[in-house]
Amino acid sequence: MHKSVYIFLGALIPIIVLSVYYLFLPKETTQEVPETQQTIYSSERLDRLNQIVYSPMGDSISAGWITEKEEQKFPSILSSIIAEAYDIQVKEKGIYEAGARASNLGISSVDNIIKQQPNLVTIEYGTNDLLDYKDEQSLKQFEANLSYIVSELKEQNIFVVLVTTWNRDKDRSQLYDDVIFKVGSKYDIPVANIRGLWTNRKDTIDPKSADNFLKNKNIKNDMHPNEKGHEEIAKRIFESIEPRWTDYLSKLK
Image (tube, rainbow, N blue to C red; front, top):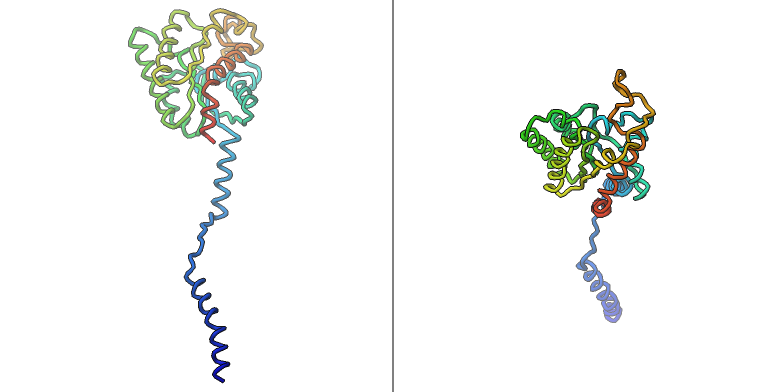
C-alpha cells in the first residue's frame, strides 16, 4: 500500500513541476493591427507610389488658350512627360484663368490649391502682372505676392516651380523675369526660363490652329503660344525640375 503511494507521488511530482514552470513562463506578445487599419496603410502607400497630383497655377497660358485640344496645353503635356519618364500616374487639377495675375487669382487661390493636396505646382504669373507696371514699387509688390504664394505652398512640402513671362514687351518682361528668378533663389526652387522660346523664335507663336478667345482680335497678332509653344514650355519646365524630382519622389515613398 505504502509502495503504491510512493510510486504515485513520484510520477505526480514531475507533472506538478512542469505545470508550475509553464505557468510562469513569459508569454510572447503580438499586437495585431486591425484589418481596416492594415487596408488604410496599404492603400496610402500604393497611392503615394503610383500617383501624384499636379496643380498648375496661372493665366490663359496655363489654361491652354489657342490650342485645339486639352492634351495640347503645356500642363497636360508636362503631366504626360512626367508619367512616362517616372512610370507614375499624374492627376491634373489646378486653378487658372485668362487675365489672371499673382495679385488677384494667385493669392486668392492658394488655400484652394493646398486643398487639392498637390505634389507639384507650377506658378505661371507675371505675363499679365507686368501690364500694371508703373514704377519700382510695382516690382516690389509683384515680388511680395509671388513670395507669399511660394512660401505658403512650400510649407506643405509641395514641389514648386516658377515659370517666366511670355511674349510681352521685352524690356518690361525682363524686369518681371528678374523678380521671378530672385524669388526662385530666395526659396531655393526651380525656375523654368521660357524667355528664349518667344524672344529668339516665332514658330512657338505662329501659325495658330485655333481661334482667339477674344473673337474680335486678329489671330495673326495673338501673343499666346501655339501647340508647338506649349510643347516647348512643357519641356523647359521638365528640364528645370528633373535634377531634383527623383529625390522628391523618393521621399514620398
